Length: 342
Ligand code: PEP
Ligand code: MN
Image (cartoon, rainbow, N blue to C red; front, side, top):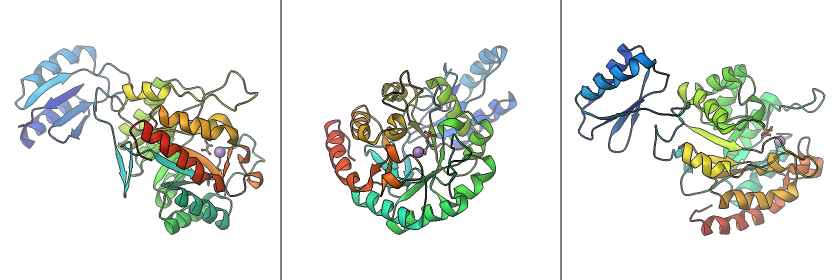
């Protein structure tokens, strides 16, 4: 349910609406807008309460309208928040006219590797540096990441080259430490439905980049986003990274590009695309980057390594940092063609 206030509603009118919703045993969420405030009720409203509560709210002074949100996800829904969410981090805007390039290695491996990667990302015009410190590996014998040392190296490289940073967090207990070191918390595909992790990330004070689970429907994904939003963090970025494929012969996953325009209808949250995990093959990454920008993605999360052949993780899908500049230059033209900058 959304209660839209009139433009001339006073703080006292808003307070009475909030109070009325609380008295009904529900949790109001205030959403101040440019011109007017809306108050949302994200939790399910018992059927017998819906009619009377709607009538009571409509009768209050300063209320313009009361509407029901028909989707299972509420805070994530466009019905709830018609304008695009634009996430401001320093000078960077995610979800605005500029397509944001986030790039860097799958895993943080060393100081030198991170400095080389960060220098290349900066030089290419990327704005956000990625690098995994806690790696979700299929095998327990594979490289698991440098953990807290990796966070430090990522932070250092980001600061040195004036880039924001993003890294994955896998365990709710690590959320505090990760949030101290990076600008954006990533929740990986394998953890999209790890609800305690979603709630912990939503309380961290950092924006959350939420990857789509490999077999998740859009509704499941948006309900996962809803966990973060309802825990108090309004800055959620959705990241499509490919879904479980029909055929693994040539690609690791199947990039679901159609999710971009569908999500643009369903939600106000920014949508970015990870062409690296989607294809599993560096040769296919440029074409999928172009397609993602053309389809309306707000950003790209690209795996890039100074020496892909020697990468400790996902080298086969990492583009060489030397080629990042020409890739981004090409994408700039696509962005221009669809009325965006990059
Ligand atoms: C990653 O970004 O390095 C990663 C592990 O991605 P995903 O969760 O999409 O597999
Ligand atoms: Mn990876």
